[in-house]
Amino acid sequence: MIIKKIYNNNAIMVEDQNNNEVILVGKGLAFNMQKEDQINPKLAEKKFELTKEINHRFEELVTSIPLDYILLSERVIAHIKEKSTKKISDSIYVTLTDHIVMMIERIKKGVDFDSLLLLNVKSLYKEEYNIALTAIELINHYLSMTISREEANFITLHIVNAESDFNMMQNYTIIEIITLIQEIVDRHFSIEQEDNRAYDRFLTHCRFFVQQIVNSNYVRSEAHSNRDMLNTMKEAYSEQYQCVKEISLLLKQKYGYLANHEEEFYLLIHIIRLST
Image (cartoon, rainbow, N blue to C red; front, side):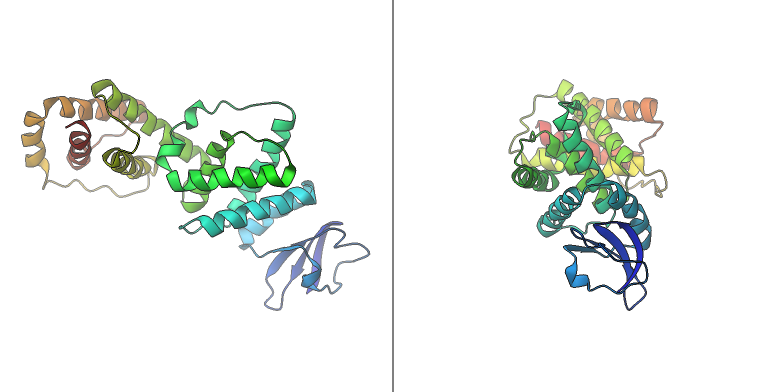
């Protein structure tokens, strides 16, 4: 491979036989090397073959982050990709690497983030949260330090972010809305949440519903097939319907979103299952 850029003594960009840009990292990899020199990629400890856009963003990290942190983050991401059942975007190499470095430095300085907003992460994204817990264990082992399990909440969001078309702020908004919906339901009914499959299905429905709200580009269609059924059911389940209307009012007043009859119908179905 031909060296195209030398970032520092431990990181270079090369061009492969297909003219693709590849980032190689390794201790002393670029020692005594110059641009346009040939190098054996097997000398590198890790090779990053990312999409062009992500590659350019990853360059900034490579030039400013110690090699040990780059290698640690790659181990964590490889672990996440191995354990996840979903496709993980290359963007995680930028977002999670940056987060891990900041997290480690923050913990070393004794600075904690308030994770109250993220309390629902565990229930909303169970698979990703469990992967994040094992990632924390991996980091603890690698660095011989103690990182709180609460940090798994933040790593979970980075995993979710890499699985979807949503950015981090949109994921925060999704969690915020679902938390407010849960608070409304909790005020109306006493529901056991642990090991409750109906509650899990309700949260799954809420997650997809709220993702549509946050994604302002999606196409809405007002279905009329369930309008008569909704009118019938709201008479039979007046308390549950009152809960649905309170959720609809919240979405309208706080987020400017007007829920249609179809959306109210399916919310009502789930709340009836939870409360009866």
